[in-house]
Image 1: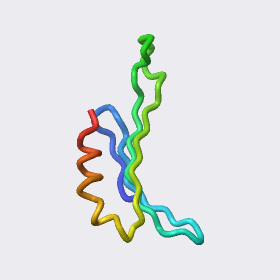
Image 2: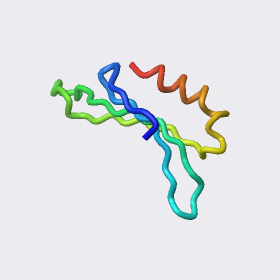
Image 3: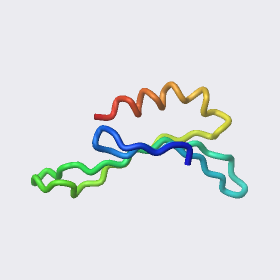
Length: 72
């Protein structure tokens, strides 16, 4: 886990994983609860994840930042 924070009524995570025989992968994830169409609060889990091999992450980081920053 590189960072975890709560903002914009959501949880934002930045982390790296290493699975044997696979490239190390960098993830940026948002978890949030949304109101369902029927009006019930918090019964829809919203999850957005962007991922890239660590070797490509610096190139992809500006795009990931724009995606994460656009979340409302």
